Image: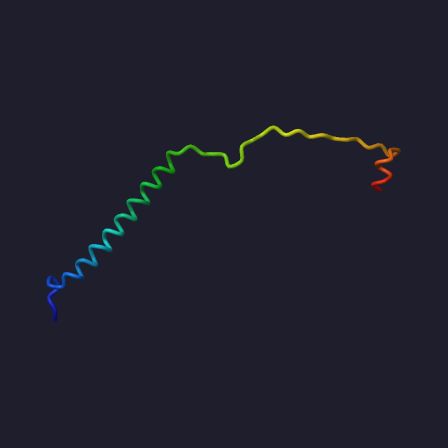
Length: 67
């Protein structure tokens, strides 16, 4: 049976995995904190709209050509 302390590459792999997990957790916490402080941004800015209505009489030529 091998002694665990003499297997330096196992400790190197464990240290690498631990550092990757630590970096991931830190990055997630920083991202969460930055999103919380940011002001909400409107995706579509509101612009005033113009609406034009045209009344068509039943006697008009435009109405008779449409129907």
